[in-house]
Image (cartoon, rainbow, N blue to C red):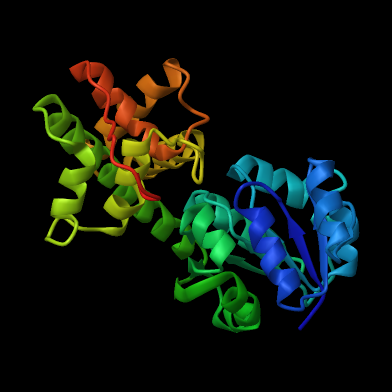
Length: 301
């Protein structure tokens, strides 16, 4: 495998980079948080500036908070692109818009550098376990070059189509995930208000048609009042805003997602943005004047 640069060591990036190191990848890392960089260096990674990563690495992976930051890291002063030469490959694992991914693809293509948009789903637990779902857009030859790294970081990876296809797939994913969390929230608030134990309600329905990965991941967190972020509301708020903007550009009405965005606006105003997106339940709790909580003991609750 080639020498790999990894930029962005946040909630998702840190465990993903660790898995690459554990998989024997020659890794060079960068992040604004020097403490996390030092941790990765202690585990065997090298560190460098964006430009140095561009110069010294054949494959560069980025996972950053938004598209503007991705553009700056790649193309800003001292950015990765200043060190790139033809034949290298950049893969952005961030959640951004298809237009932003296509901009990166076109700019790098002019330099003879490949680009794949490859956002991931699975949250912090999937990043730690190396079981992320990786959805990709770009050229097939570049996708194939990235397979050894995808196999370390995830349990599935699929090339959906040309540049931007991975990013649009992630936006669709975020619609389903976040509306799913909102639905679980509304249902458990109703059950709680009626006097039922919400965790027992969850246990009763999880094996039926209402069962889902979202239900299993988020209902226990709500019942335990555990809102430690695996995927922050702030990041999902950004993603849903990107969904709305993309839909408007395509003249597609998305009434449910529009309502979801307004729910997230409420959560932003009320200072819930740093919580896990299971914290969407706060909106429905505040409306109903109840708190989803279970006294059941056990690891799940």
